[in-house]
Image 1 (cartoon, rainbow, N blue to C red):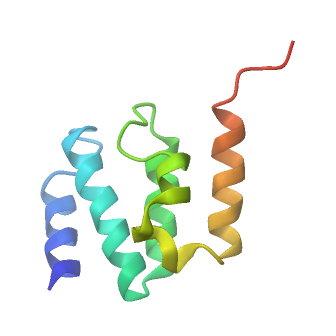
Image 2 (cartoon, rainbow, N blue to C red):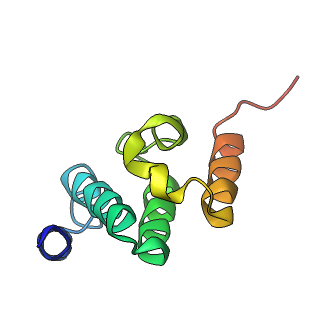
Length: 94
């Protein structure tokens, strides 16, 4: 039920139409997917959100600490996304 509602919400208002609200819907869909075992889809949505220029919806910090992402913690792709996008946000060393 929650998975269907999340998919419907993101279909009606995808991040490409509204990065703030659509991104919010997509982040919640990814969290539901993680909770119900839809790992590949959740990881695809997480990567999409982290790649967006307006990264306020999801951050590597929230992925590290929010219990909603616990089902993904041992996944190698999840770990790789954390490394990739944590490094992308750092200022270059002087």
